[in-house]
Image (cartoon, rainbow over all chains, first blue to last red; front, top):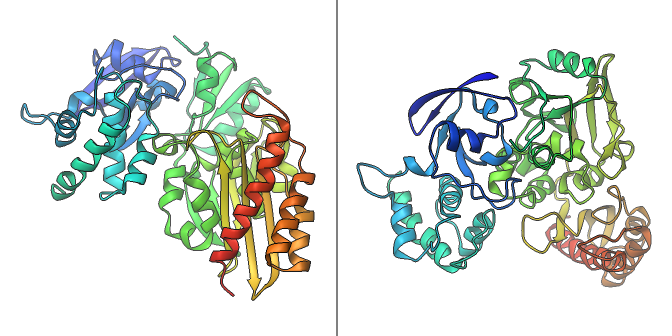
Length: 157
Length: 288
């Protein structure tokens, strides 16, 4: 067993686990933060994407022990003062989600995309979110939501 | 728990990592970005006695120019390469190839050393290493060893790295100023592994071709340099007929295997199609 300490959404956490415990399982089971979803568990579907030291990363193909000392961000940390994050607002307004399973991963991926490319073209948005599989809305609403959120996030910088 | 049990080591220095790896005599795996190894562990297709995690070795992540080469530390993330001004200026082929590697949240973790050491035949970086005639540095108990691209890849997922060696650095010669380049690949979805990919470099002097480089991904067990096709361009120039002849020759130079994604014939066909596309685009952006 190893001790791991990490900051998640600005809150310090500590836990003990086996070195083989996946980061996503630690986040869900040990920290009780079940907003991050587990889909394929081998790095394909993107549902488990979180922010790892400020960058989007798949938490099902990382070990919890690798996050020792790291700053993580999950979907639970997006709301501010009881209000949805502008990207979440955009997903709601543009029908960017239906069942919601892929949504945490979509949001985290889109946030990193917009962080590194504040004015993406539609093609770049599609390329960016190709990292995450959605099986119900289709992607058009998601593309529309990311495109709508881009200028709002850019103006907040 | 998805992965099997293993002992976990996260050394802070390369020397400690080499020593730890040596202690397991080939039963340990080196963990770089983990974007290929972790899925193998989750499926329990790999059951190493130990993982030697390189992610705490800060000195293995760098990009610097030296002796006409760009040298990249093995743990340099693909996302860092994607945004590196040095790579954009000196190795535009590597920059272009990086956009094809996995997806954004894969590239934040995936590393150039991991991608090359994993030696997936359909991966982009091994093809770039072959096309640019790069080399890698491996550190073992006996010290450093430089391995040229042509000697590194043995077969599927297999390099000539010894079990106690760690790939520490990738060295790519600076591309000549004005060189044309292109990486063309076909995958069912952007970000999936290539069914076939072609990396091309062209140095032109008017319609003459001073240098041509062509390397494949996905068209055989290892990246293949299409030397006879390069030769056609270097002797016949960059006209349409030479491009056609080079693309035709390319299909004769590969020995692809069939798998669930594509037949051997289809891969051979794609090799010709993508060679032509890569050449046309590379020639289009070449200056001189």
